[in-house]
Image 1: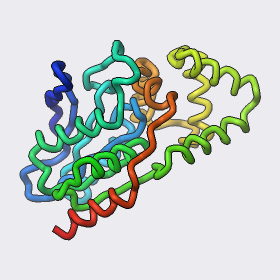
Image 2: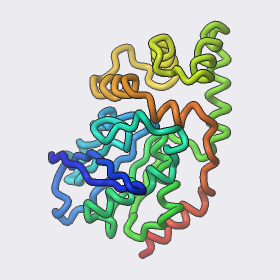
Image 3: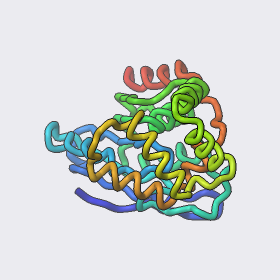
Length: 239
């Protein structure tokens, strides 16, 4: 296991993307890059995927997306700074820095599915051989509608409290964070005891909800057409 960071330039500013490699990228075995969910959650809860190196000899790359985990925090940036295009550019920068752009796989989970689709649509990477999408959505409007429907099943005072904090931009309030954890434990991860990796990711997001507040609470932009993204992947595999 090796941890490091890569510089990522946005305009005149330079940030750091923290990443960890399990295995040897020069081994000749195709690596898999993990895109975790969120947005605004660190990579820790996806750590079990690192076992692919132990069980199958596959190099695995986990990284903290900008503004989360050990990557540069951006508490002073306006919400409009955080766009899918920003994280697509960061991913492309990382893949090129690691020297794997000619031959790699991607696994996207939750928001990572969105990121993977956006990345493929923007760059049509010929070196991408396999794409794994899990627990994500191909339609943000439908996803948001489903979340709203789940919230409506909660008591009215809970709904009013959550909506108020989101409307006023106070999602870092303890009351909101506790409500969010209740929601996650009922609808997202139904375990009585959460693994320490999950707790670490959620704690870090609670300490700095900048990305969550900017991208999750605000109305999202529509995804690019999924068929064009999959065509790009199919083209990459043929080559």
